[in-house]
Length: 497
Image: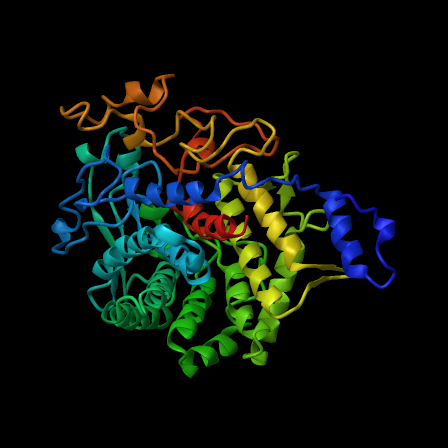
């Protein structure tokens, strides 16, 4: 910024506070010519086609993929074909798949108007998820939450088209509860019902009615699915955070989708019981707290729901906890300015938290408000710039000049931890590649033969260093729940920068 801080008028504490934050965390200006957000948006949505399971449609654009897992659910007498592989393996995990679907839907709800011709593909990405979730919840009192044995799958390196590992279908029911995964599934179905409300009213009504049924099951039969299915889902997608947040999250989306008073009353009645104010700077497939508070706060900021004021206070606290210079001890920044949280696959935190920054900036801006952070205040523009800086970092504006989106920019990861991408395609190698026969491709120093366009990997470590190597899965593996929030971010920036 060219202006000196002393040039601000004495009655403009907000401007001084914003400038102070920029001094603490300089955000380098990026011109629209340097980052093509629309191209990145196109790629980020295309990624989901490469993650599809089941029988691929005629309009499939990712040509190195073929039909796979066409008998999922057969051993249990149900049809569980379709859905998404969550990452670089061949298991269908229901918990992250539902969260992915929720975030794709939220991206469309808030930023669909900015997607242009990509909107129809984003809607298809949602429907590929919801069609599967409808199958997984077709039996009352039962939710199928996983297909495939993760231990046998992770013992192999093979294409999804060649899978010969166990495809066991795992479920929760009234005797083996899973309020976390059921609550997230209800949220996904409810959020998607908003996406389809005007586009396909009949499908929208089906999604909403199923969401109501699944939420009722989740609330009535409480418990964590990682207790009921510990040996199956842990340590892969073990619910560390507890199931309470998913119940509030599901209720929040049902309230938004249905406008029924019972969900408003449920939220108010259970706000303290279900710990709405806990771990406010966490948001991802396991922890919904920051998302709950931001989602519900929109109504407060629109002047429609003063009774939810405490959620807005929590949302303000979340924003303040991740601002550079005054951030929470759990939130770090790398020297290059990337949000960093402990644990694997850091980009999942970057995209999810940045999505909330952008969404909340819009809510606050429409209400003509700022976010109070003690003696300082954060403007909506500051929140947008911080979110934009994270996106620009992902796209290559970082110390190593690496785009962490495969296919975008001059330099991007070549050896991602992804079976289908790293093994020759069926078209290139029609013969079956067995479980252990794929190891030579896993260990190869060569780039992956199939460029998984749009895949965003786990990303660099806290020092901004990145090993472009398959065995370093925490850094080199892409996931659907990294990309889903990024779709909304890229949509907004493609329209405004």
